[in-house]
Structures are given as C-alpha cells and as structure tokens.
Image 1 (cartoon, one colour):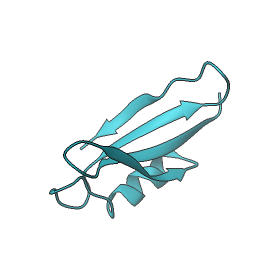
Image 2: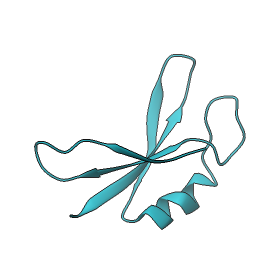
Image 3: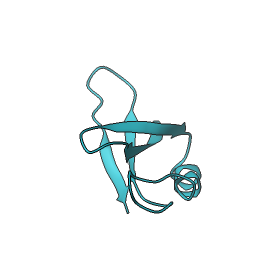
Length: 64
C-alpha cells in the first residue's frame, strides 16, 4: 500500500503543525534533522505515515 510521510512539530504551547511531506520514511527522517518542536533542539518532532483513501488513518512511525 502506498503511503506518504509527514513531520509534525509542536509550534506553540497549544498547537502543532505539519512541517513537510515526504515520499519515503528515510527522506522524512533526514528532513527531521532541520525541524524542531517549540523550545527544543533540531531533530525533535514526530513522523507519521498515512495511506490514500477515505478511510486512511495516520500512523505514528517515529518520535524524538
């Protein structure tokens, strides 16, 4: 099943945002080096994957 990957970062005390979308887990993991959660160093955040379709649900793949 085809999936896309995205990085989600905490941007304030109360919200988070998607920092980017990637075709592979390895590409997302490499990009995470330049992303960070609010008040944390680079390399922090979560990587999720999601399939295509109406019933697709995100899956947490990596958390740092």
